[in-house]
Length: 137
Image (cartoon, rainbow, N blue to C red):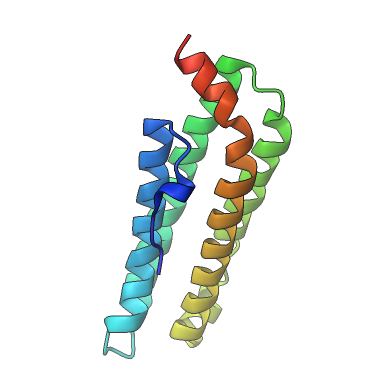
């Protein structure tokens, strides 16, 4: 489902590796939904969502550290996007997930897929040149 390819690569090793890890976590949720025969997969869903949230915050902190270090001019708008996504993850209705696990897990997966693809191809590509220039200086 989450297939990394070089179209998503920014050419910044650390960031590309982190993006690949986000893809891998998304794939964990996809695989759980498509391979588990169990009716109750709530704990597994929660574990993956918490892993996704923690890794997302770690990744955003990496980008934001570079925004400060390199004086990235669009940092405020980009950081706002980060905050909105973290808020979406933090406000997932876990009671609803527990009631209709597969339906809500698929909804979470769709939200994550949409956001990651749009964010990498959109906002992240905007800082690419700034980061590369400063990292190679």
